[in-house]
Amino acid sequence: MILSIESSCDDSSLALTSLETCELLFARKISQDLAHTRFGGVVPEIASRLHAQNLPLLLEQLKNFLLESSAQRAQNQVQNIESCKENPFAPIKAIAVTNRPGLSVTLSEGVCMANALALSLNVPLLYLNHLKGHIYSLFIGQMEAKIGKGLGILLVSGGHTQLLLMRDFSHIALISQSLDDSFGESFDKVAKMLSLGYPGGGVVESFARKYDGALLPLPLPLKHDKGLNFSFSGLKNAVRLEIQKYAKNVDSIESKKSKDIEYVREAQLGGGEAEFTSAQMIQIDGIDSRQPKNIADSTESKKSKNIRHEREQSSAEAKRNSLPRDDTINGIGAEPSGIHFREGDTLKWNKNFIAQICASFQSAACAHLLDKTRKFFAHFGDKFEYFGVVGGASANLTLRTHIESLCKEFGKTPLYAPLEFCSDNAAMMGRLGIEAYKHALKNAPKNTNANSFDPLSDAIYPKSLEEDFIKGDFIS
Image (cartoon, rainbow, N blue to C red):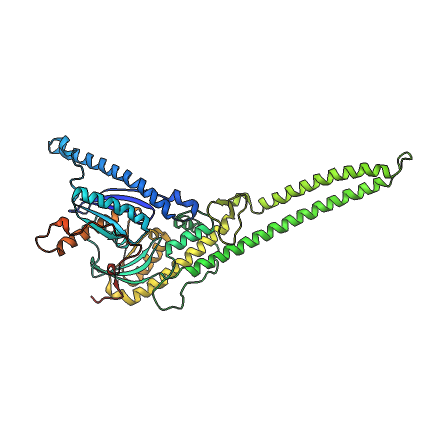
């Protein structure tokens, strides 16, 4: 078995995979979404501390699994159960860990555990690229990777958007990538603008699926660029401007309603003053008209205060009721740029507008992906027969529907990872680890101990290494 560890961002995960059959034997993950949602994104220091807490918990679960498995085997083979409890980790032949790319402070937590386990078990340690792990999520539980004459890949995750061309384990070409924000990151940032929490992919897609009206005229990024690179920063900015425009309209409506209420109250106050003035000019039983004036002034002062209080309450009520209560939601998160919070720290939006902005953004973002992917198909289509969509954002069903149509148009077979393995997980790193283990053994010098082909190291890298991917095209 091979033990794999994943801690590149905000998911702590461990997995066990069979070296002989590639069967996934054990897979556990602890997500940190709730810890980061109030910030609208991942806070590296918080993520690092949670990995330090969660990885040992997962290792304890793994130990219990191994103990139960060894006890079961002992019973089936009529062996001494106590002897199997001495070292439950004995069946593990290698440790695989993500050491690039990712957040340095979170990668270090997984690498630290991997070094300790490899040293104590005296097994080889494999340092793996997280992005290659996403590619091998397509083949979890499969003995053979469906590559055929070639595999085209669209990788869409929280940190990366790439088009790749793969011939085998050692030959993966990076064709293009995002020049700024990634596809998944742009979803998170739009969700943050609307105070919908983190992660944003699922919630933005959920609102978009509920909307069937007219879309906002958002731009298609790099529309006239013939290259294959992506860009989402301009689209994200266009969404921000639409939200600001909507917020200003809401403020304008609130201001108008407040002024209308104030005008009505002032009219009422004016009528009251006329009545008081008439009363002041009447002589009562020969009493000087100036005497009742003091009484009238006192009454007027009291009523004026009451009217001002009512006016303030009415103005506040008008602001609270500027949007229908049965058609609003309360989103929690950081305040978007140029937008003001209402009712304390909670931003109040109209549900229909949220659905419209989410649907408009998702449509434009997917259109941009499809525009560049279509050009990729046209240029490299003769070099692959399968096309895989991987990464956390590949779970987007709208994107999958468009990819299905594109593959059908070009005669390619689409591949997807199971939904539970789209986001970061150790199972995909384990499947990649099997290929890396076999490759290392195959290329190791003769008479070399298998335990020595990868020395211990604490090296971590926030980006991929140059040797991880081939630059540009390669010829079959």
